[in-house]
Image 1 (cartoon, helix red, strand yellow):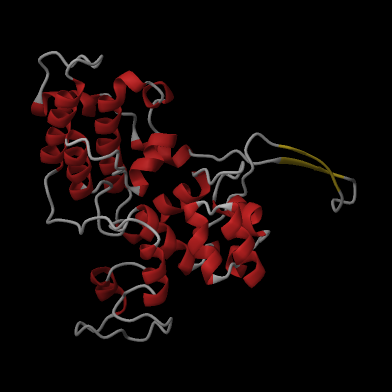
Image 2 (spheres, helix red, strand yellow):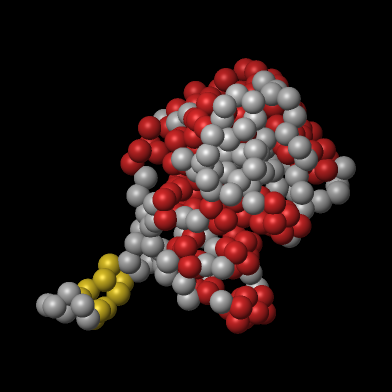
Length: 288
């Protein structure tokens, strides 16, 4: 089990009920990630607000719809008279099945070897990627990714209501274009939603609401720590890290020349999720 999960999950797996670990022996205290790793990673990104008490999905989606309607006044998104829960129900009925998650595959290079199977003759690839399993990803890299992309990942239901509301309010106030997508939302946007919807700027509101609803459905369909691990692993194998690198393994090879993720230094592991600039890559490579 990934030991970066919150303490409430560890209680049923390894705690004596009094807040004391019964010896997982991995250098963690009270179910928290390594404090140094967490401090460095969080310092490198803009901290997101703390998660609120559990808000109902329909309340969040309804607010998102209302905000989108205001933002779309004078624009090209025609919502007509469909508002509130009826609009959300319509979006729900149009979602693709989350069972598609079981059929996910990832484009990898086709490599041609000589008859000995040792000499590489040619490589054909559209995306540079090497798929890895959850067990192949070091804990420090998982912690860094969650700190950068989705600090509520282990607790949320696929979406972060507080981040959504904050981003919507900032957008209405003209204070910036702040992202609010969780790891699960990013995954369903790239792999489960209709590409035509995702790529159509005139359907931004529809896409965002469907993204939230589908992320919730995916989290419900794959519950608990095992489900979260599957979602996180798929995300790390899917995401584009720049410089033609798709997936965390290709990113480690491109940025630091490391084929085994467990050989990354803590500093390199923390930097990788942020797509480090060339100057930082050079500095961190000298330390390895």
